[in-house]
Length: 220
Image 1 (spheres, rainbow, N blue to C red):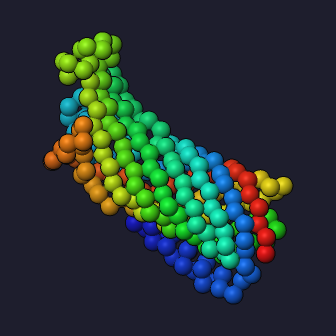
Image 2: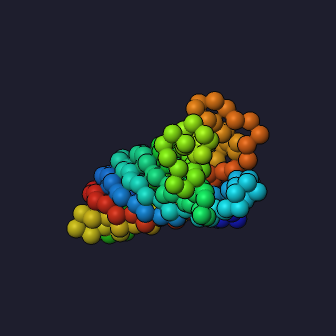
């Protein structure tokens, strides 16, 4: 994972250097996205496995959207993303892990011709995950009064560094973006807004890739 982060940083810096002296770009675009992201959940899986014999996959599917305004090549915008549920179950229990995050992004449209644009970007924001454990077939009163289900939350500040490319045709935007998400907290677990110490150390950070589809326009 660290090698992937280093590669993204080096490519972004090299691209910015190549872009110095280029033509000014103005405009903006918005998008819908679908992607995959890896997360560090080894310690969480150790806990779930020891307690229930279940295990979660460390690769997650994501879905979301966002947008950028571009002024003299500089890009500013934001995005929101949902992390689709990852689960495992047996005849008695089901464990589900899902969440989402929001980011404020800044970037630079380092290259743009009639159809193609290339940009590095940095982001900062926050996100959270929810771990749910439920007994299959439990009734409502059993679930809330007898400990047959449970729900704990994890939250963290996030950083993001990425490199993206878009293709524009008749106002439509098609693109791909790859990067690395940084998670600045490893053990911030809570239940009903009360801290849970000694929880497993995890991270929402990791490499990701996503496809985007949207619309926008550009001028020089």
